[in-house]
Each structure stands twice: as structure tokens, then as C-alpha cells.
Image (cartoon, rainbow, N blue to C red):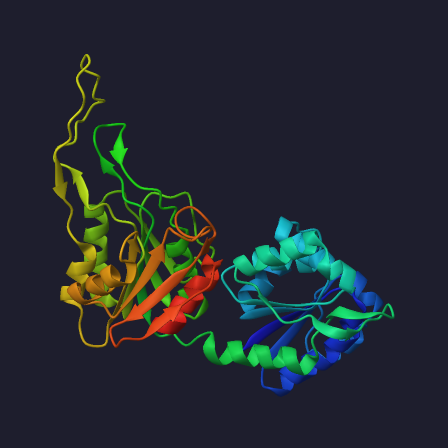
Length: 391
């Protein structure tokens, strides 16, 4: 694997050469990127010697585009130590030096940070908020550990040891690309069913869960066909995710049924409208005195059931269920009726789960009777759990 080790200006930077040595010894190709403050603790000669590559530390040394060429080169970006400063910069979208610019450009690929700072800094609400933000984006944290700190006190804030960090890299290198030969279909977002030229029937789905699933599949090397209803969201991993934007349930049905035969599996998280107006006016319908409006609704095609009937041996089909009563029993019936391998049960009863939020809580039911229940997690973490359980 091609690894970029980012080094920032903390006393723990003295451990960076040993970390690079361990990674090279494990067979990885390593390049280093350092901030100006990091150079107060470790020298260019040391980093270039242990990595056998030139150090990237000057944003403008090669015309100001090296953050792009390095991003294209690397498979993983590891920041050790990660100070409160670099954590705050990334969480706020600030890019004012070589490493922070590289971090913002390094989208769609795994990033690991090994935080290191004073224990009071680590506990500060701003730092914890920034850590939570980065985790919700899928950035992994290793540590910090508890122990004696450079300032003479003991507490949580010590950078994890190089051996611990290297072991986490090995975990990613052996599992992160396990889907690299596979193509997956994901559906996301709502569908809009037109009443007239300005009105529609829809729902509150934001698409966040489906987009998180697509990103998580791409992180593991899969090529993803993402069919999404109307949403403002976009993907960061454009290399592995191909977006098909649709509006109605019939358009999503057409796209999904065309793409599914080419795919190893499908995860259908879209909140598809069950019904649509029987007729759609090509103009805005006007109020007619005091009379109400009556809509005749007809049933939309069932995407999940159709893919269940199309499914071939070796394909995996995962559906979603949003229930308010008899939740697991209804989800289990849906799994069996539509020939699914897994069904992910959402519940609106848990605060912070469901439509329009960045967190979720799910129960995954499998055809063979297994049951996996999650706590409230970010949707990216939920996506990783779903993929770990179903692929």
C-alpha cells in the first residue's frame, strides 16, 4: 500500500521516523508530509532517509500542485502526531499549508489520525466537537493513550505508540479493499411524484444514509452505481461512485432494474413513494372556489420485490424498512416476502435517528436468523456496520 505520513508540530513528532520505519519494514511505500512546526522536532534528512522519498513540506515548492499529485499517488493518509491545530483546521475546512491542503484534497480514501496533545486540550469541548466531526466523515482515530505527557502531567493525550498505529494500518490494508473486484448498486434519497408542474408528493428523506453507504463501499474498493432521488448531496469518491440522478419511483425502478444484473449486490436505502397521482397536470392546478382537491393515487412498481425476483445465485440484496408498529415482525415479513438476504430496520422512536439527521440507529436482520443491533452512531459508522455485516 502507498502511505502518506503527515507530521505536525507536537513533541510526539520525534516518534514519526520509527513509525515510518515500521511501515516500510511491513512492505509499504511511504512518503512524508510535514508542517513547518513539525520541522522543529524532526529533520528533513531523517524523514527522507527512513522513507527513501523527498519530504513534502512546502506548498509552493513545485508550483503549488503537489497536494494533488500526492493525493492521486497515496492509498492512505496517516497523520501522526495529529495536534489540536490540524484537527481543527480539517474540521473547519482550512487549508493554509502543505499538510492541511493535502488533507482537504484527500477525499474518498482512508485517513487515520493519531491525536497528541495536553490532556486539558484533549478534553476541551472544541476539540471534542472537531473529533466528532472528523469521525462522522469516516476519519479513523488511533488513541490518544493515557500516560505521562511532555508537560510533566499524566492524563489522556499521549500519542499512541508507533507499533499500535502500524497495527491499525495493517488492519486497513488487509480489509479496506476487500470489495475491489465487485460492483454494488445503492439507492438513496426520496422520490418525488408530480401532481402538477409545481407540486409533488414526497417524504423527508435526505439521502444521507444512502450516500454514506456508497462512500463506505467505495472505501473498500467497490465500484458503486448510486441511484438517488432529489437531494442536494454529492459524493467525494468520484473515482469509484457513479451517480444516476432520478426524480420519480418509476425512474428509479428503471435505473435499478437495468443496473442490478451487472452488480454483485444491492443495498436499497431509498425512501421510495408507494403511490403516485394517477394523472399529472402539465400546468399549475388552481383553487376552485371552496372545493377541496381530490387525488386519485395508483401504486408504484415495487423496486425491492422486483430485484428480489431477479436475484441470481451469488448476488446479495439488502433492503431497508421504516416501521412504527410491530417493527421487527413487519421487517421480518418484508425480508421473506421480497426475497431479501438482509433487511435494515430503522426506527423513528429513537431521538437522533431517521430522516434528515447525521446519526442513525438500526437493527440488521438476516435471512438465516442473525440479528445485529447498533447504538446511535454517525451514518458513516452505520454504513460501515451494514457493509461489514452483509458483504
